[in-house]
Length: 232
Image 1 (cartoon, rainbow, N blue to C red):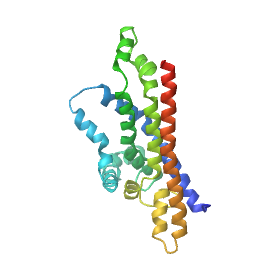
Image 2: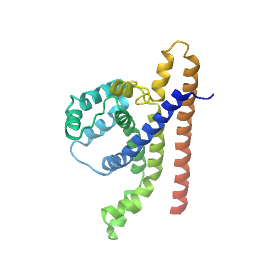
Image 3: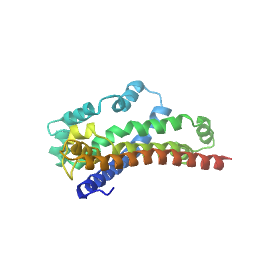
Image 4: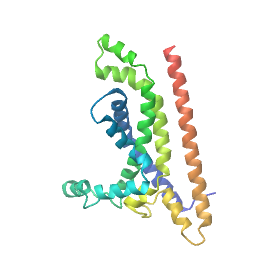
């Protein structure tokens, strides 16, 4: 089933938004996962819960909270507008922000689980041999974290393609600006005689989501096998 121009526009916007959110999330998720897995500090449990909060909150509520914080009258959004002229509500950049917030916990969780499975003794042995914190992280920890980073990145990308509630609440449903694939599907379902369009968009979303999950598992397994052979 071929997509028409508007549907291709929604697909391209979804891919762009998911990619940009992934690029923003990657360093942040890696750092947060490392802190949660390797550091003990007061308030760690609260910080952990805060990071994973978007997984349990209704996406519409997350979008509403973003609107309160990053809207033109919000404490962060107002400051950005006054200081840098940055306007996030009803923009593509705001769409990226909403998707970034919603997918960050997925990446953190995948990376953290992998990191917690790494023998801390390897890092300690490197420390006793004179390796500094940066050397230990770059030469030991980071390579062993790669399966989790890769799996989390692909899963977050696929989830970003399907994010709906936070996006429509925070940045609305503007064609060519914030109308991603899920919003285009919603619009088609609300449009008379939009069944054919909805079916094409639903099939596209299904293929992208399933493909992302399969690719994530395949890449993670392949990387684990390569790391296992390298260690042997």
